[in-house]
Length: 472
Image (cartoon, rainbow, N blue to C red; front, side):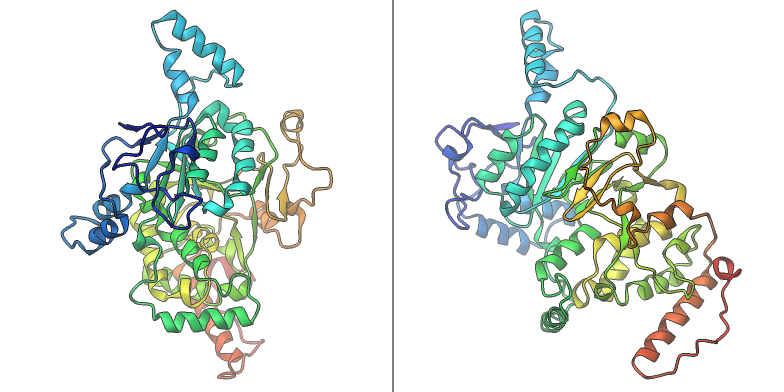
């Protein structure tokens, strides 16, 4: 590993970091990082030319790359930095044959309140898509997550940004945890308008949604984020050898101690996707997502044992989805041909830019199509808050009462009228066939034509439902 001592005079490879005091400059200011050491990852390039803009453009213009992964690895290399957490070092030292080193490490672990834990860990990582300006919101979340869970299990954190991380961001994050942290940039291909989208047409669509006061309706960066989380984050070079991820957002709260390993739980119980909040999407952001999903199911001959969870009695989308700002899931599933094919179909449908499709309903509908219901897990014992929405576990036993410190005035979203958790709990396996998809699609299109005055909608028209709808 190429170590960079940031207290020394910057060398030619001390690049790839924005000086937070200078807007946009690629200057490595060692005084900001104090005693923190950053490392170049083993096997990654560590020497770069003075102009990173020219370097990056050269990588993007080079047509000789054998794969997108090879190109993306070269592209982001100047902005990949790693800090080895103190816990990782101390765990190595307590295995030393030198008694003095071993005892010293044990004493320091006690001082840092790092419990001894030699349980087998999963091949997993936290994934945080974040910007420099969100540092103040994220630090309390990081400390809380460590205190509630990760001080015992020591999973690494991967921070991703479409821009270079600032010195201040990396220094403060590294100083706020005893666990390993890695910082990286998002490849440009994963955060740009694709060639099949007309930028002017997309701009008109954003202006139209903004005029209708649709939340984030006028934001291009929000659309990039949703598209990235839907179909690209799992392709990031630093996640290619990782099996599981836990998504974390800035400013969220965790109300309960998590005294077991959710990754291992998922792995042992053949769970591939999990959630803590199920709610309804804003309909104006996804007017055609359900229609395109039904089209894809028919085209791909996909049936499901619980797709009915997402359907109304009229075959329309009920807007239920799992809130993806918290999700623990299998990266193997997201990298599967089945999931990637669905995402590519949606991408070419242009809804990420012409509408404002979110990654939460995309992940949810994909799970409904491609996974068995028993492969989805609801973490009832994890208390959680994101923005104004909170949920706390049902205190069904004394153990949970000891583990959770939920605010007394919490408005538990589990019981809110917009929560889809009751439907989830009552959902039973009911086969959704191709004929169900075909009939639902017919009704969706008929309703759309009636909305635009092209065809009257007969509310008394007999439905041709099958399987799930057969008993209505």
